Length: 138
Image (cartoon, rainbow, N blue to C red; front, side):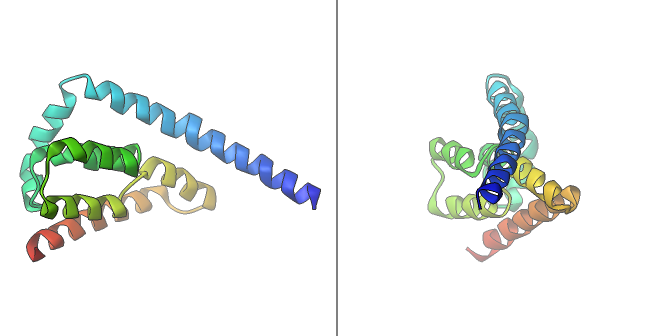
């Protein structure tokens, strides 16, 4: 029994090291640095035409990108200052539920032997389609 727990703890710590130190922390630092540059406003302006298909302003790209790259909670935190209405919040929340924490979940997927590329593409496509459908329905 002790051997099983010990082996599980070692594998758990190894996975934590890989997820947190190698993926989450660098992505968090990069996105934080991008917030201090004109990149985020540029990204919002560039994505504004696509965001209109979703019924969202261009600024809503920031919480979607943060949610997909950093964490679901980062996306939610970025949505608060935008002052979006209930309709827009519903669209953003639904999209974040389908495509969040992609680097972390890609690492887990890779460990399980799944295709990382297909996981990311399917989740982003599903979030976009769902966002468009919600925009058309409400």
